[in-house]
Amino acid sequence: MTKQNKLPVLWFLLGFGIFMSSRASIIIPFIGVAIIIAPIFILGFIRSQTTKKGNLLTILGFLLSLNIALWGLFDVGEATSSLIYNFVRSSVLALLFSLPYIADRLIYPKLKEHMILSTLSFPIATTAIFFLISLEGPFDGDMISAVYGYGNLVFKQIASIAGLWGFVFIFSWLASVINYTWEKRFNWGQIKAVTVTFAFTLLAIIIFGAVKTSSLINPESHTVKIAAMFLLPEEGEEFDIEGLFSKAPSPYEETMSKIKALTEEAASKGAKIAAFQETAIKVNAKDENTFIEQCKSIAVENNVYFSLGYGVFPDEGKGWNKSILISNQGELDVDYRKRYLLGMGDLFGETLIYNKGPEVIQSADTPYGRIGVSI
Image 1 (cartoon, one colour):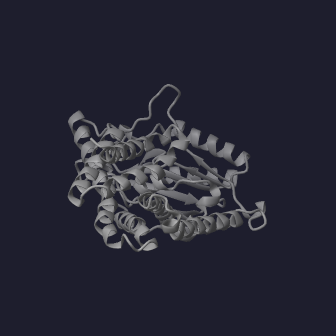
Image 2 (tube, helix red, strand yellow):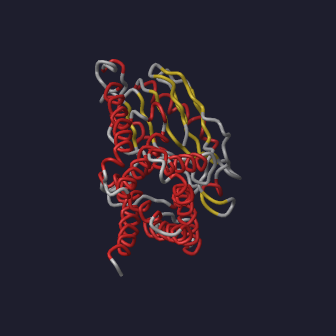
Image 3 (cartoon, helix red, strand yellow):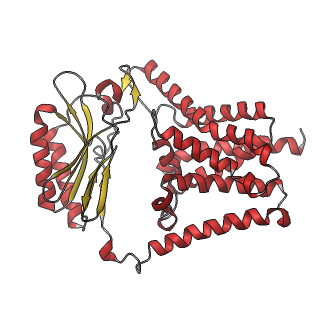
């Protein structure tokens, strides 16, 4: 095997190896940068192959890396069902992640000599395809936001203009620009226009973010402290993934005591908005009114806008996966029912125990701006 033939093998291993490690960002925060680096090598690999071979091997790479990285992530009860569910879910994700690379492999050769335009085929394909995927399940936008919403506070201000898709576009464009400069063997005369255009775009984003977060533009009096809270298992206990798909109610008094204590702690540290996780508590439908009234009391007593996710179940049939927003005056401003449910019909997952909510993101005007609630 010649050196030239070995390079694509190296790109394949690096690209999908780094992509696979991005899940470790849950444990090691800085590894989140893997999602920026991995596409550089994967794109280089697929462009180095013939169309058919490159597309098939890229799909294979995503199938292997995602099935390994997400192996056993979801326990839906019986072992065989869990195995099938994890494999099907990871494999569908793999196909979705492959689409932008396949689209670029088909488009890029036709634009290869058009300098700046040629570097836009991959970011445009990635942004467009991921946006279309986010419009309807089964994954909604989480799979994209979980991996692409990366960067410091200054850089993240691009979200105020372009939303999540600003991150997807700029990171994908970076991968395309690096591959373009590599193909041109870093010949400055050939890469100058592309490199300078990307650099000025990136600089403009950073300057915008720096100005937007500057104390001159946003003094402390114009900011609000928010507490995001997660009810963790007791020390030494594992998080019960299977419990997410169960109708069993939470130990009410114990859970509400934790919610109240954490909200009091957040308020004592200056938080004006207190938010809890999805299904932080599960209650019976007959107890829901009492539960809501207690949440209102917590909001008023602590002078906070209070947001909490909970599951509610009737005696028979499916329940609702809900999230509420209560004002510091005790008013129920938002009562949201989850639209995108994880699962498959009446077979397993959330769709087995929850009804689908309406396709409406509710919002409320507050002293801190308009707040939208979704799950």
